[in-house]
Amino acid sequence: MPSTWLLTREADDARSDREPLDARGLPVIEVPCVETSWRAWPWAEAAGVTLFTSRRTVRAWDQAGRPPLGDVVTLSPASERALLEVGLVPSLAVEGGVVALAEHLVARWEVLGRPPTLVRYPTSNAGLQTPEQRDAMKLLSLLGEVDRRVVYELRAPERLALALAAATTFGWSITFSSPSAVSHFFAALREARPPYQVVCLGRSTARAWNELRRAGWPEAITTSDLRSTLHEVTA
Image 1 (cartoon, rainbow, N blue to C red):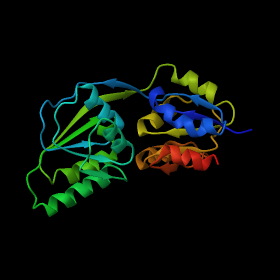
Image 2 (tube, rainbow, N blue to C red):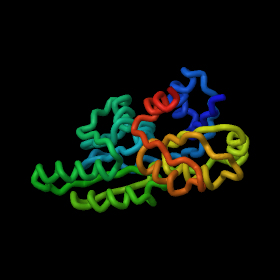
Image 3 (cartoon, rainbow, N blue to C red):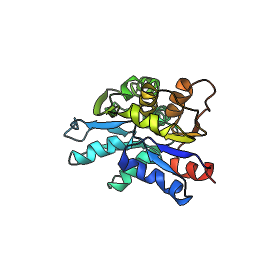
């Protein structure tokens, strides 16, 4: 009998993850391990370069009424796709995480003759604490002032422990799309049998799983395209 796939993103995001699983007739349970609390977009005018490193930062800008932006750079593919959906074409889209994006920005800045640059960096409360953002900030500070602000908060849903207890009783596999989801998962998890497969979107998410996973549990499969990887691992 195939394992049940647990989808840990919020319901709106989880719909796209379901498609390859539903197409194969695999059982799916949505168990959101994060919920979003939105903050106000902090910039009213266009200035410098703005980094969009998650779909939620794009949504925060969109629901703020789409205030003016200067140059826009982003991560590919998910954040880039979200920008294109709201009509923004980034001048730079990079795979591999925010450190890779910062490296490309610094390289472009060098070619332009090192002009003073304001960098606007919308993020989450959880993102402020990550090693990736710490390393990226060191690189971005070479360009000039970096204005990093929280535009949304990630929290663990209520009753997550009960939902996970029910979902992990029998054979299961799981997907994660953020380190916050991984940390909320393990904070709420009680006794559970090991998963068959774990698919993580992005290196930082996979690192969080591999650091927190219980003894004998599988390492994460790392991907930059969750839907394509789910197609592959369930073939």
